Image (cartoon, rainbow, N blue to C red; front, side, top):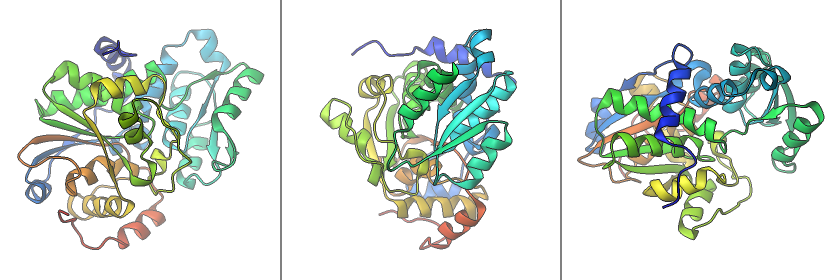
Length: 330
């Protein structure tokens, strides 16, 4: 096992920086979900986080770690939406400024919110242009600091505070399910789980169309894929990060996938039974529990709901496609 890119001490330090800034989001339970899965599920509701997703944790921690001159010069980031909003809000809170590179087809609610937090937005074609190359060029031309959405130790440490709070509030868990895009959240949560509950099994969940993480874990190296076609826009990453992959390889027990149809059923369950809005990416871990993609039966299971930023019209259209008000085991 290699030395991780971050330690639990880094996560603890990030948690102190976030005190009074990030919400300590609730951990909710559902008797219906428990009966349906045969498990005791603890939902960590990052859809109630400031700006609507866990991403504020990592963005704020990373910017707060910069010296005053670099903060004053400004930040550039690339994101499909949630990291964009998080960087924009964190920059405003820390008296910095933000330039965000976003795909033209990003949800308009996320683009509007990013601009609303005061950031400048540059649009690109996610299927034909390289967002990382665009961001590096802008950073060099304008003297900005690039903070990527997941492949950054300070971002990973901030995201790990999600699991730290979950374990503190729910107690020991047998299994922790975490959404997976580029791996910032999963890697941070895996480090927290290792420190707080070493016996807990950690499983990452990604969309079937974007299974680069699963392929990478099986291959033992980072596998690159084309931009996946999935409703989980926050998980449309093409590869894991150089910092996140070694942590996932060493600390995560398995990676599983769920279909878009299963994501829709999970979203409909949360809206209909728990009266909360969860975006498609945010429902990844829950869908794995609901549809037995992970071995949850008879276990105490932590389920990270990573965000709730979805356009209301699109949300309504998606959940209307659900086959039933509550998903059934498959």
